[in-house]
Length: 237
Image: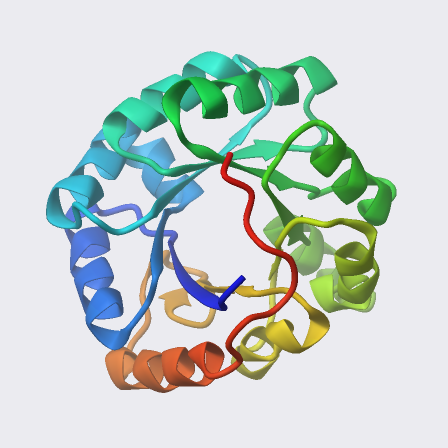
């Protein structure tokens, strides 16, 4: 698929989230993500606000669904989301329910392998259960906690090549990547480049980062889009 730039709106103020999205779209960002902090703060209202302002832009609802999968996906689809995130550590029946909702409501399903004992096997399971994308994810708490205790901070790049090789669906890498690392993930075969904390969002305050973010985003989008086609094609569901 063609490379995609997605911005994670991990912001707890709805007006700021919309303003940040406006800036991102002007810079060339392709997909908007209603990040988990925004969804916790506003639920369906956050997704609706983004959909009202951006009627044609794909919107990822980062629900991190663990249970009640069909209903959660239905609610977010009705609010205007085009993509829903379900966790690999959920029960397989929950993942199946979310995938069913994808067919029922014409939305795409992203499976997140965060905290899987075997990240590669988790990604493969998500594909086998019908997810259309894999989010290869090292969590915020995991990264910071291990580093705080003096350990080496884990990175999604550690196993990204193995995850990409294990599945036939598009992969994105998430979790503590530097700007340079995120922009280069298409070189690993992962076409979905996610920008968020701490790249364009302040990871500590969950507000838009300071500085000329729009100009930086424009350069990032140009570089990512220049990769062209990377990895496998998208699934229709």
